[in-house]
Amino acid sequence: MKYVDEYRDADLAKALAARIAAEAKPGVSYRFMEFCGGHTHAISRYGVEDLLPANVQMIHGPGCPVCVLPIGRINDAIKLAALPQVTLCTYADLMRVPAENGASLMKARAAGADIRMVYSTMDALRIAEAEPHREVVFLAIGFETTTPPTALAVKRAQALGLRNFFVFCNHVLTPAAMRAILDGANAETERLDGIVGPAHVSTVIGARPYEFVAEIYRTPIVISGFEPLDVMQSILMLTRQVNAGRREVENQYARAVSRDGNIKAQREMDEVFDLRDSFEWRGLGEVPKSALRLRGAYAKFDAERRFDIETVRARDNPACECGAILRGAKRPTDCKLFGSLCTPDTPMGSCMVSSEGSCAAHYAYGRFRDARRARAVEAVS
Amino acid sequence: MELLGDDMARVDLGGVSKAINIALVDDVAVGDFVVIHVGYALSRIDAEEAERTLALLRDAAAATEIGA
Image (cartoon, each protein chain N blue to C red):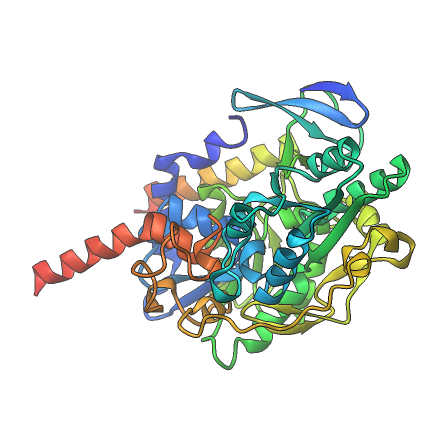
């Protein structure tokens, strides 16, 4: 596929890896966080970490929509789906996220709830149109990539005069989470020397909203495409910023991201949503001004109002390390449950569910590398 | 890409044909490449920028081969 295959070229990747190794100074450690789950997946899938010198380390960030949704909100969704008149529409990877007491949307559906997996908000709208006797709730999650599609669906429902379409809004904001990570970076998390910035999110919000990362937190950031060569080029750009003492917003993904982003998509979001004072994130806790809700003008589509949802905060499984992993403070293999009790078939925590989750990505690809390394160490000793 | 009207377009995803929504990107035309997320086009690929990025990649890679 054009604009994809050329960014997966193995020979170029090896040459780029050699460039990174040549420019990363011995004795200096470079700790870069890839914020976005799409990058986490790409780094694991293409073995990017294997190509990097030992002193360039990647830390997985919180940018996985399914992973950061707190248990309390999944409990809410399960309760909603249990209402006899409700059809709950959800993106597929939320189905298996564990809620309290081993519950999940998948189990709720097996028990008879009307839960349907959709690819797009347009599918949920079609269901609401086709089945006017059902109250169709779209379980909206995700960052600024999935938010404009939800906004368009709400406006379309308005235009169609639909009275049976509702949105349970859990949309969250990337810059707010980045700020929370950087605020914590001096305490629990070790120092971060740079951030690989999101690809698709940035097509919508542009490069401008990251300027605070460079200006206030004095941390380099490079917005990066999702292909392996994109990620490696971004790592090289971050390495060069560190070496030169520069702290800038750079844009490796210029073929799809501009400084101002997609103004049309931003307008749609602004028209339909406004800021919540605060929202709970799995791993990050309450983050001020980090999430969206439907504006008053669209209140009749707001599932929280229609069904009087009062979210009760719920505790994560105490043995599960998803929280610390989402903050970049721990790695998947630091969790006792990883790969034993917690696997993609039997996830105990959200990071093992979505393919963008750090644990799922490491289970699918990285664990073989771990085993190889362990064997190599044994052979030496 | 084939324009279907009503903000929809049929795109080719590496051999898979799919109808997507193009309401978020202005003036999408046949022959354009777009970034797609959950069934919506989010951005148009800028061919010149894509070529510039590849040229930078090749330069960095070549520098290693000569320098090494």
